[in-house]
View (spheres, rainbow, N blue to C red):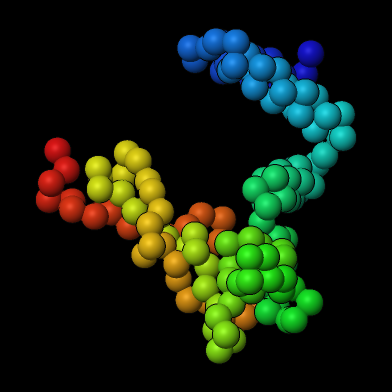
Length: 141
């Protein structure tokens, strides 16, 4: 058993688990086994992890260009085919509906709202995380 698998199992043993999380833990171990068999160096391991994370979250590896080939019109609204939270207005301006998330409990939980959309310009590098905005900090205990 590799050090990575031993480490993962040790960490899984520290958290409460049930049948659902046991299934997830098994899936993670399978991914780690494949990753371990690939023989990455430090550099390629980091790039592989970063690319896997972005792609598994349906985030593009390169900036969106705004070119016409990137757009579709599901439900009559121009939507980017490479990143589904980007939309285009009739005037050609574009926005990311997941650009901001909000917390009203000091960052314990986050939500989107009608104010989550942010205007964008191309080329657009999709961020790893949305902008986080904490509201009503004076009410947080």
